Image (cartoon, rainbow, N blue to C red; front, side):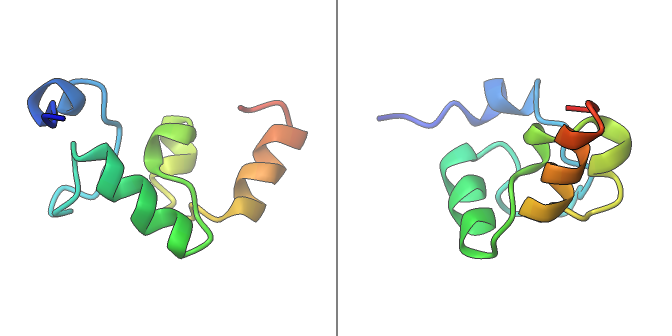
Length: 67
């Protein structure tokens, strides 16, 4: 399967510009799950920019109806 990195970058909201996984979703998801996190695309912009991508932060946002 061919990676569609350029196409993925159009909708990637990750604000960490030097990330080597940016646009390579399969690597991004694997990395974050290993660290008990979710990737940037699961968070609204203001929450993503906090760089707190933990499951717990996501759960708080869901509880607050922000996701």
